[in-house]
Image 1: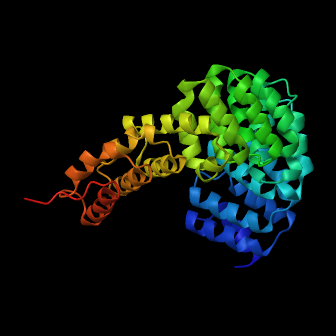
Image 2: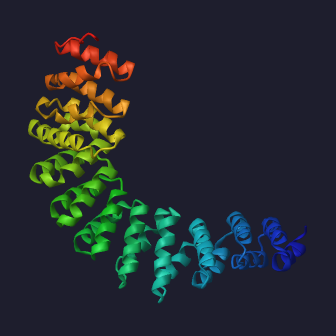
Image 3: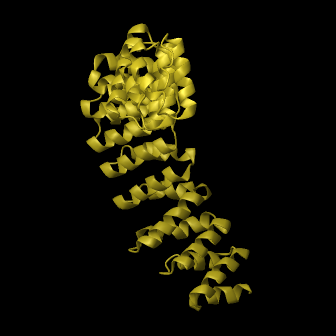
Length: 358
């Protein structure tokens, strides 16, 4: 199929012929071809739109970006979405056009610009997003906050911290989430400051953000917060178990170990942890070495999950939990054979040998 035939078929052929023509046109990249392929993005046929999209991703350039921008104003969601996807992937070809779009009088276009910059993965677009933090429209500012997080822009930390304390309610949540995605020490410090400064409804989102960021520097402040606000115990315990467990024992002071052990034990007693988290919590509880908080361990000895049971048996041994002996004896003859051997070893170590079967 030559160029002229492909252009004709793309405009007037049956859907399968048009899809094939869209792919064949990838051999050329002149203005007429780019215009025809961009026009095909307005087709009601999904296959045609996808074929045109694939070809434009291969041959698109700054001219394509300029052709795509008007499609963002289309009344057809499918057309807008196709244009947005392509602009995200082709943004480096003409970033100045996205900056121009970010100054459009239409709020919707400025939001589109912020979203496209965010999804582009191009850190060079952090500058324009920082400028959008001054936009008069809250939706645009929120889109810029989200975008700076997705780009992991360390230069935005101070501004994001301000939005987390002074912005509109939903923007505060967005700013906290954005900080969690920036892997810098300054972002960690900002979240730690917010741990004390944030309003009560934002404290758990800040705790979750620190967990997702995963910096060991957050451990001591989180433990201090646990001592000061017991109601946050479940959230803090979950974060420490999920993201920071390996660093907790070396950083926790005795008083912190006791508080965390208490929070972990209560969560295990309540059954609020799923199997994977329960195993990690039992392992951490054993490492903390606070035998007075072994109630959660005893509770998990009867878990229906063998993996959780095994972790509980090991924790009972490490913590020397004599209170667990009656439960272990009852389990000897009814649990998995592999666990039975572990139970026998634990009972022997605790000075309570295996009871003979009748």
